[in-house]
Image 1 (spheres, rainbow, N blue to C red):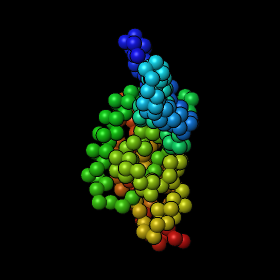
Image 2: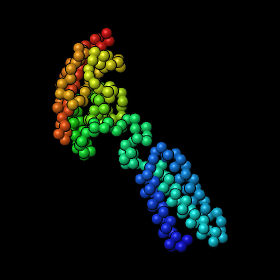
Image 3: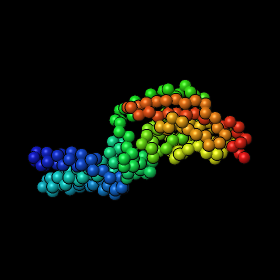
Length: 234
Protein backbone atom coordinates (compact mmCIF):
# COMPACT_ATOMS: atom_id res chain seq x y z
CA UNK A 1 0.00 0.00 0.00
CA UNK A 2 1.14 3.53 -0.69
CA UNK A 3 1.68 5.90 2.22
CA UNK A 4 -1.25 8.02 1.04
CA UNK A 5 -3.61 5.09 0.79
CA UNK A 6 -2.48 3.78 4.17
CA UNK A 7 -3.13 7.19 5.76
CA UNK A 8 -6.61 7.27 4.23
CA UNK A 9 -7.37 3.83 5.65
CA UNK A 10 -6.22 4.90 9.11
CA UNK A 11 -8.41 7.99 8.84
CA UNK A 12 -11.36 5.73 7.93
CA UNK A 13 -10.64 3.59 10.97
CA UNK A 14 -10.66 6.55 13.38
CA UNK A 15 -13.77 8.11 11.83
CA UNK A 16 -15.59 4.75 11.94
CA UNK A 17 -14.78 4.29 15.62
CA UNK A 18 -15.99 7.80 16.54
CA UNK A 19 -19.12 7.56 14.40
CA UNK A 20 -20.01 4.11 15.73
CA UNK A 21 -19.68 5.30 19.31
CA UNK A 22 -21.62 8.53 18.85
CA UNK A 23 -24.44 7.04 16.75
CA UNK A 24 -24.85 3.90 18.82
CA UNK A 25 -28.35 2.46 18.97
CA UNK A 26 -28.65 -0.53 21.36
CA UNK A 27 -31.67 -1.77 19.40
CA UNK A 28 -29.28 -2.76 16.60
CA UNK A 29 -26.38 -3.95 18.73
CA UNK A 30 -26.71 -7.64 17.79
CA UNK A 31 -26.63 -6.99 14.05
CA UNK A 32 -23.76 -4.52 14.47
CA UNK A 33 -21.77 -7.03 16.50
CA UNK A 34 -22.21 -9.72 13.85
CA UNK A 35 -21.15 -7.31 11.09
CA UNK A 36 -18.14 -6.19 13.14
CA UNK A 37 -16.97 -9.73 13.85
CA UNK A 38 -17.50 -10.75 10.21
CA UNK A 39 -15.48 -7.81 8.91
CA UNK A 40 -12.78 -8.51 11.48
CA UNK A 41 -12.50 -12.09 10.25
CA UNK A 42 -12.24 -10.91 6.63
CA UNK A 43 -9.62 -8.29 7.58
CA UNK A 44 -7.58 -11.03 9.27
CA UNK A 45 -7.71 -13.50 6.36
CA UNK A 46 -7.38 -11.22 3.33
CA UNK A 47 -3.71 -10.06 3.52
CA UNK A 48 -2.17 -13.54 3.72
CA UNK A 49 -4.44 -15.59 1.46
CA UNK A 50 -2.72 -14.81 -1.91
CA UNK A 51 0.99 -14.32 -2.67
CA UNK A 52 1.27 -12.31 -5.95
CA UNK A 53 2.43 -8.78 -5.12
CA UNK A 54 -0.25 -6.87 -7.02
CA UNK A 55 -3.09 -8.94 -5.59
CA UNK A 56 -1.57 -8.80 -2.13
CA UNK A 57 -1.58 -4.98 -2.22
CA UNK A 58 -5.24 -4.91 -3.26
CA UNK A 59 -6.16 -7.28 -0.49
CA UNK A 60 -4.21 -5.28 2.07
CA UNK A 61 -6.29 -2.23 1.15
CA UNK A 62 -9.50 -4.24 1.41
CA UNK A 63 -8.35 -5.62 4.76
CA UNK A 64 -7.79 -2.11 6.13
CA UNK A 65 -11.24 -1.04 4.96
CA UNK A 66 -12.82 -4.11 6.58
CA UNK A 67 -10.89 -3.37 9.76
CA UNK A 68 -12.25 0.18 9.79
CA UNK A 69 -15.82 -1.06 9.29
CA UNK A 70 -15.27 -3.68 11.99
CA UNK A 71 -14.05 -1.11 14.53
CA UNK A 72 -17.00 1.16 13.78
CA UNK A 73 -19.53 -1.68 14.05
CA UNK A 74 -18.11 -2.97 17.32
CA UNK A 75 -18.04 0.56 18.75
CA UNK A 76 -21.68 0.87 17.67
CA UNK A 77 -22.57 -2.43 19.38
CA UNK A 78 -20.68 -1.92 22.64
CA UNK A 79 -20.96 1.68 23.90
CA UNK A 80 -20.18 2.46 27.50
CA UNK A 81 -22.53 4.08 30.00
CA UNK A 82 -21.83 7.57 28.66
CA UNK A 83 -23.76 6.70 25.49
CA UNK A 84 -26.53 5.04 27.47
CA UNK A 85 -26.91 8.09 29.68
CA UNK A 86 -27.05 10.32 26.61
CA UNK A 87 -29.90 8.16 25.30
CA UNK A 88 -31.55 8.15 28.75
CA UNK A 89 -31.51 4.32 28.59
CA UNK A 90 -34.58 4.52 26.32
CA UNK A 91 -33.38 1.71 24.03
CA UNK A 92 -32.53 -0.75 26.77
CA UNK A 93 -34.29 -2.66 29.52
CA UNK A 94 -33.13 0.07 31.90
CA UNK A 95 -35.59 2.39 30.16
CA UNK A 96 -38.33 0.83 32.26
CA UNK A 97 -36.47 1.90 35.41
CA UNK A 98 -34.79 5.16 34.47
CA UNK A 99 -37.79 6.92 32.99
CA UNK A 100 -37.61 10.39 31.56
CA UNK A 101 -39.43 12.96 33.77
CA UNK A 102 -42.89 13.93 32.68
CA UNK A 103 -43.06 17.28 30.87
CA UNK A 104 -43.12 20.09 33.40
CA UNK A 105 -42.00 17.83 36.26
CA UNK A 106 -38.24 18.03 35.83
CA UNK A 107 -36.22 19.02 38.88
CA UNK A 108 -34.29 22.11 37.83
CA UNK A 109 -30.96 21.36 39.48
CA UNK A 110 -27.53 20.44 38.20
CA UNK A 111 -26.25 16.87 38.42
CA UNK A 112 -23.43 18.05 40.66
CA UNK A 113 -25.89 19.61 43.13
CA UNK A 114 -28.12 16.52 43.08
CA UNK A 115 -25.12 14.25 43.67
CA UNK A 116 -23.89 16.35 46.58
CA UNK A 117 -27.42 16.50 48.01
CA UNK A 118 -27.80 12.71 47.85
CA UNK A 119 -24.47 12.18 49.61
CA UNK A 120 -25.26 14.74 52.31
CA UNK A 121 -28.74 13.29 52.87
CA UNK A 122 -27.39 9.74 53.17
CA UNK A 123 -24.68 10.90 55.57
CA UNK A 124 -27.25 12.47 57.88
CA UNK A 125 -29.61 9.49 57.72
CA UNK A 126 -27.00 6.79 58.25
CA UNK A 127 -26.73 7.13 62.06
CA UNK A 128 -30.53 7.04 62.39
CA UNK A 129 -30.98 4.01 60.11
CA UNK A 130 -28.02 1.91 61.15
CA UNK A 131 -29.09 -1.52 62.41
CA UNK A 132 -32.78 -0.96 61.65
CA UNK A 133 -35.05 -3.17 59.54
CA UNK A 134 -37.19 -1.01 57.26
CA UNK A 135 -38.64 -0.30 53.82
CA UNK A 136 -38.13 2.90 51.88
CA UNK A 137 -41.05 4.54 50.10
CA UNK A 138 -41.20 7.43 47.65
CA UNK A 139 -43.00 8.57 44.52
CA UNK A 140 -40.88 8.00 41.41
CA UNK A 141 -43.20 10.27 39.38
CA UNK A 142 -42.46 13.23 41.62
CA UNK A 143 -39.94 15.72 40.26
CA UNK A 144 -37.57 14.49 43.00
CA UNK A 145 -38.39 10.84 42.34
CA UNK A 146 -35.06 9.91 40.78
CA UNK A 147 -33.26 11.84 43.51
CA UNK A 148 -35.10 9.88 46.22
CA UNK A 149 -34.15 6.66 44.43
CA UNK A 150 -30.53 7.76 44.42
CA UNK A 151 -30.66 8.41 48.16
CA UNK A 152 -32.21 5.00 48.77
CA UNK A 153 -29.68 3.22 46.59
CA UNK A 154 -26.88 4.49 48.82
CA UNK A 155 -28.34 2.24 51.53
CA UNK A 156 -29.75 -0.66 49.54
CA UNK A 157 -27.59 -0.74 46.38
CA UNK A 158 -29.70 -2.71 43.84
CA UNK A 159 -31.90 -4.54 46.36
CA UNK A 160 -35.50 -4.07 45.28
CA UNK A 161 -36.67 -5.99 48.35
CA UNK A 162 -35.84 -2.97 50.50
CA UNK A 163 -38.19 -0.67 48.55
CA UNK A 164 -41.88 -0.88 49.39
CA UNK A 165 -42.64 0.49 45.92
CA UNK A 166 -42.11 3.67 43.92
CA UNK A 167 -45.73 4.82 43.93
CA UNK A 168 -46.04 6.54 47.30
CA UNK A 169 -49.27 8.51 47.59
CA UNK A 170 -50.41 8.36 51.20
CA UNK A 171 -50.47 6.00 54.16
CA UNK A 172 -53.69 4.02 54.55
CA UNK A 173 -54.91 1.12 56.68
CA UNK A 174 -53.35 -1.40 54.29
CA UNK A 175 -49.86 0.02 54.61
CA UNK A 176 -49.16 -1.84 57.86
CA UNK A 177 -50.23 -5.10 56.20
CA UNK A 178 -47.55 -4.56 53.57
CA UNK A 179 -44.95 -3.82 56.23
CA UNK A 180 -45.80 -7.12 57.90
CA UNK A 181 -46.06 -9.17 54.69
CA UNK A 182 -42.56 -10.66 54.92
CA UNK A 183 -43.33 -12.41 58.20
CA UNK A 184 -41.58 -9.75 60.24
CA UNK A 185 -42.81 -6.20 60.67
CA UNK A 186 -40.52 -3.61 59.14
CA UNK A 187 -40.36 0.10 59.83
CA UNK A 188 -41.02 2.58 57.05
CA UNK A 189 -38.91 5.47 55.76
CA UNK A 190 -40.79 7.88 53.49
CA UNK A 191 -38.96 10.41 51.35
CA UNK A 192 -41.27 13.20 50.25
CA UNK A 193 -41.63 16.94 49.88
CA UNK A 194 -44.55 16.83 52.35
CA UNK A 195 -43.72 18.25 55.76
CA UNK A 196 -46.46 16.18 57.39
CA UNK A 197 -47.75 12.71 56.54
CA UNK A 198 -51.24 11.73 57.72
CA UNK A 199 -51.67 8.24 59.17
CA UNK A 200 -55.35 7.75 58.24
CA UNK A 201 -55.94 5.37 61.19
CA UNK A 202 -53.06 3.10 60.13
CA UNK A 203 -51.38 1.37 63.11
CA UNK A 204 -48.14 3.26 62.62
CA UNK A 205 -46.29 5.69 64.82
CA UNK A 206 -44.04 8.51 63.65
CA UNK A 207 -40.62 8.07 65.24
CA UNK A 208 -38.83 11.07 63.76
CA UNK A 209 -38.75 13.53 60.87
CA UNK A 210 -35.63 15.00 59.29
CA UNK A 211 -35.73 18.09 57.09
CA UNK A 212 -33.35 18.54 54.15
CA UNK A 213 -32.70 21.14 51.47
CA UNK A 214 -30.80 20.72 48.21
CA UNK A 215 -30.35 23.58 45.74
CA UNK A 216 -33.18 25.48 47.43
CA UNK A 217 -35.63 22.54 47.35
CA UNK A 218 -36.94 21.30 50.68
CA UNK A 219 -37.84 17.66 51.32
CA UNK A 220 -38.32 15.40 54.32
CA UNK A 221 -37.56 11.93 55.61
CA UNK A 222 -40.33 10.52 57.86
CA UNK A 223 -39.65 7.35 59.82
CA UNK A 224 -42.57 5.22 61.05
CA UNK A 225 -42.84 1.99 62.98
CA UNK A 226 -45.74 -0.46 63.38
CA UNK A 227 -47.41 0.23 66.71
CA UNK A 228 -48.78 -3.27 67.21
CA UNK A 229 -47.71 -6.00 64.76
CA UNK A 230 -50.87 -7.99 65.50
CA UNK A 231 -53.04 -5.21 64.08
CA UNK A 232 -51.27 -5.56 60.73
CA UNK A 233 -52.66 -9.07 60.29
CA UNK A 234 -56.27 -8.35 61.21
